[in-house]
Image 1 (spheres, rainbow, N blue to C red):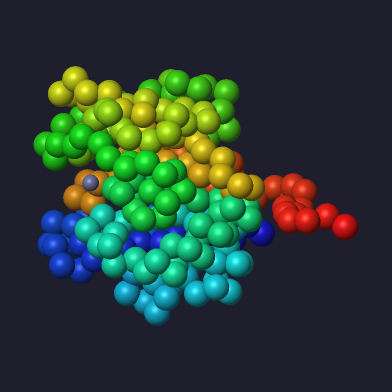
Image 2: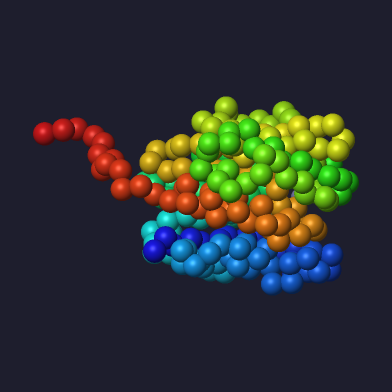
Length: 231
Ligand code: ZN
């Protein structure tokens, strides 16, 4: 069975009533519940020892989902090193929303990963721009999120290997909201929707994207990664 770890910073939900009202058990609990019985799902949070990601836990993880926002700097470099190594060895990584600024995402992509934003609770329409991609399985050609935080271009990331979603916002902005990358043997998917004060992860199509993304990012058997001098 595919082992999934849902990592969440889990700070807003404990300090901010508006966030508590939307995610009383934490964003990680809602995401974990959205994944299905094909996956063995566990959660991990920033304030646990090793941020809930000790070496054995990471080694058992096939796909890691990452949600962070206000405490990116508190993630230890040791854990970032470890996650990077696991991704290069084949672990899938799904980075959500404000995770664009996570140390691990910037490390793996090598750019600032900065963007424009506006928290106005306006509508987002997510368009599937790669309908044959497995992450788009079962989705309509577009779907609407009635209240979101806007993210706008330029999004300072490397050109995605595949771009699955583009978002349009009521203010007129557009954003590359579903980006696939390959790093080493690992698959990385960035998915934009997910601000903490809106019930984005309750949305059926968002949940479908998360399940599809876990399937896509699950490690393949592949071939051994062998480096160095040959006999
Ligand atoms: Zn946000």
